Image (tube, rainbow, N blue to C red):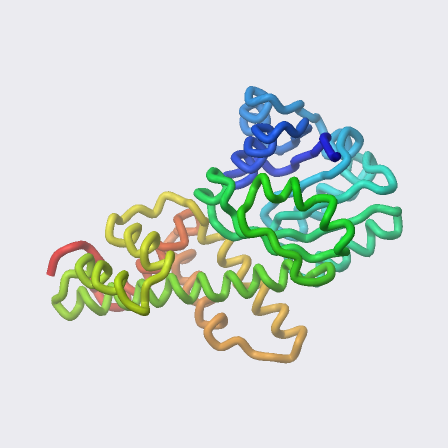
Length: 298
């Protein structure tokens, strides 16, 4: 049974995920560029590492939860990178959201060294990370996946292998298309209600009992009404995820019209200075175009 786990990336999602693993009895060695986050993990029972290399040397499985492809690659490579510390047979589980092509490239790099990779991006936001209820979509070798599934199951409730390396990232791109367009649809609907002189809070409540019911309408619709844009899922990250899907579609020679529109909506929120707002703040650009603000009441 695997006991020694490394965790690199202790942000909004990574810190509670690492704590859930410690609660499950795993011995964690952790690293993050933000010293305060490392200190919080150490206070919870983790061993603090000075470099990614040290994490790799002290772990059988190394989990990365990082913002984008370049940062994942930077953490792995170089004289102090995790790859230097890892040994043949070690397993990298990258739970970041990166491009499918980058995941395939990293997996090939590890294979050259006798190591393994599972790409396992997640959905569920900070709440899912805290409650260990994430949906985890994995790509990689089935035998390797079987070894790490018990670990993943301590962080998520729906843990699925969907294909080979890169397939997990394709699934996450699909997830972000659906979630992003869902948030934009809820924003449009609530702004439309307000502009029509109907209480958007009452419209939301009515829709929750019908075919339009969804977690996005339930949670993000309420955030819009409450004007609560403290980040659970940051605009900058969903914007990045949307761009991943746009670029992957280009590589496939196809067009994603809804996703292309979504990319421009994120650009609009970014132009308002909202990169670190919650992604429900997409309502702000719809409000700006319509000159109304979604607040309860007619």
